[in-house]
Length: 263
Image (cartoon, rainbow, N blue to C red; front, side, top):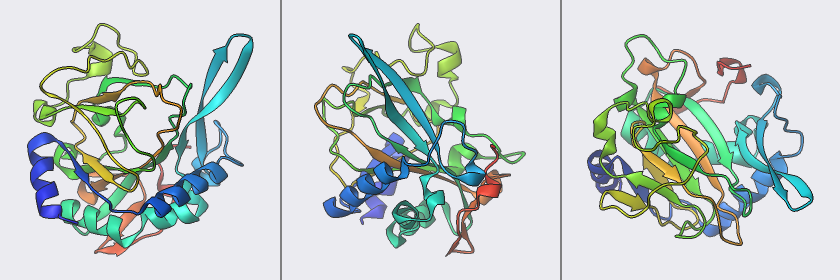
């Protein structure tokens, strides 16, 4: 991995891609593990007893069905997805950007199935970052990572970024709707043609990273296939009051569900 180039791109644009961190076969195993993890998950299940599932209900004609949307903390199952989270390649990326003392603030699979209509309005991930320490420096201490399980292209709802927007600070976009009239987070009616907008194109096994202040969103998946991703977010321990340890003194730590500040 050319992390020197990646770091330069990340610091300039607020988003960067690390190609081929994982293989296509490994991406397929992530998919299989995510689907298997759906069994036993539930929207109201507390993290202390397993992974939680968010679903979307879609009606087509006279048929109503639910689609898996986001699976929260599937690594708590201690299976393949936990092994990917703690893989030496992931450790190398995290330690290079954040150092040896790091906590993990999210662990999620996004399914993005064709027909589910799921999308995200322009937003910044800082809106989700809770359980922070007093005097935190989350803008410089947080790193979002996403492993692409499927190819991202122009038709399957790939991520859109406003390049350089991480330098604008917290814009409170969803509440104040600075960039759009509709404040709903799950509204993906985004403008896609502008010089500063980057449409992500990626292959299975690529890892995307972005800043907690980077403005981004996504359109609905209108293709005939899924666009699954595996997300893991990290923060330097100094900015994280709660949350499980990821690295302590450079050593990987098991995910402790008791440290997740939500029941």
